[in-house]
Length: 356
Ligand SMILES: Nc1ncnc2c1ncn2[C@@H]1O[C@H](COP(=O)(O)OP(=O)(O)OP(=O)(O)O)[C@@H](O)[C@H]1O
Ligand SMILES: [Mg+2]
Image (cartoon, rainbow, N blue to C red; front, side, top):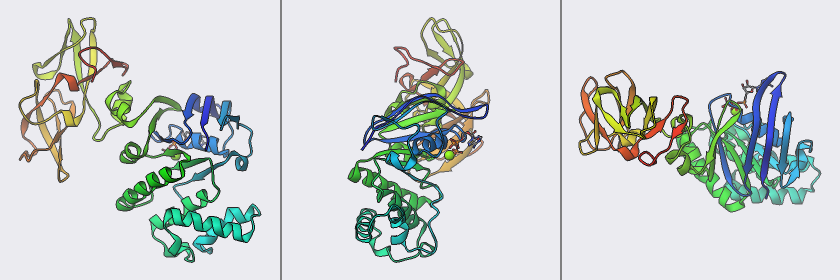
């Protein structure tokens, strides 16, 4: 088991800097999830930890030891990719044990470790099959098995489930959580899937443009984001951002709606409200007319997508069985305590009245 630490790490390809002076501690035994828009540097970060890319600047430590120039094999890390690329002519058992065999382990040792990994992943009954005769989820388990047999201190996962269909993703997600509890290794995991990030992570790291925007527990990032980027990135449908003007202790929104705000605040601000806090019901403090464009029915909930009078788009969550149709204008209500304020640069404005 091991902590991974990046101190002032940069990565450059020629003159292009894709990771910029980044500090990160991945705690020993944690399940840390990296999220961020495409191209922000998630895979690059993982590949540097794995030793597949050099570190241009700064220090990479694994288990308290500087690892910048350490041979990938000596780092005690194993990486699982989205494209798991199994050897098609080998059985599952040989696929899983291949690296051990190459490393010169004797046959009995390889067999024992393959069996142990297969037990953990519940694929013992598949050991003699070829990859072509497996489902996507079973193949992905074989790929994880290849990592497990090496008994790594750190697992690196780069979108391991994104090739699977929705149902398999859910069951593999549960298995990964179980695996982590069982082997308690450090896991650094990249995903584009909100639910995966929220349910698997002890800690989520939100990246943008080669830098970290914020790290925290899923609850911290959701409930207390530092800026509008994180607030908009975590949560689905994303947070609504309503334009407003601050003046003399009041925030003026469209349709004559006013909210209290710190007296010192002036100029344009953005009012953030999550869809679940904007409900098509009376009884909350503020009310805004919203013209509905689309209704998304999801069984227990439905999302209403519409526009305010100034055309700003909003998403509203309706839990009650309301009969609302596209084209209708409805009143949507919300409370002060569910409002987050952001300044023109996107930085969160925290204050006594808006501090949810
Ligand atoms: N070998 C390379 N040479 C030049 N630029 C590269 C190289 N590899 C990656 N990049 C660039 O580095 C940036 C980060 O890439 P990276 O693959 O880490 O992104 P990512 O966050 O994993 O994105 P995605 O979510 O799409 O997988 C991208 O702009 C990419 O084009
Ligand atoms: Mg990537």
